[in-house]
Image 1 (spheres, rainbow, N blue to C red):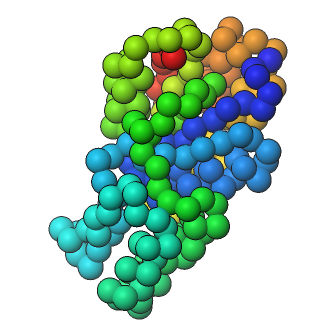
Image 2 (image 1 turned 90 degrees about the vertical axis):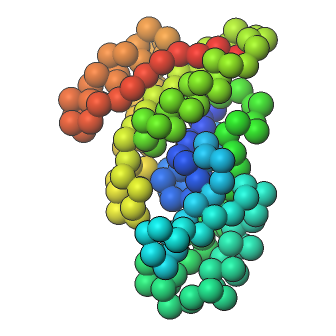
Length: 194
């Protein structure tokens, strides 16, 4: 059985919607969880598709919330961004970039293939120190509020399944295949080492 509780990281591009929704669900179910973004900056929808709001990862959720409130309260209330940021600031102070974290995890779940590639590339570029394995699994989740909720349910169910295995290293492939068949989604999976 994996170390108890399973140490989980959830990564999307900006640590705003998908990773935070999964963070919220997993924490409620007792997992040791952290969430991250893998992009160079935090990007949120703006008044037009070509005018996103861009923030540094050091910007807190409260600061982003207040900035968008000043820019256009009506727009960011209607599109759900203020509600999302309100949830986020109740979970942790601000977005975190995965590449700035040195903590070990048993399982890292990414929310899109591009993020998966960035996480695997980063882990493989680090010098191996402990040779502790970490499973990196991609669960493609469209970046909207409804899909983030559905994706969080799937990620939580997957983590619960992995948590209850007797031998994660030998059972994870069969478990992922079962989840692929049930969810009709393909999961990318690789093992990296710390």
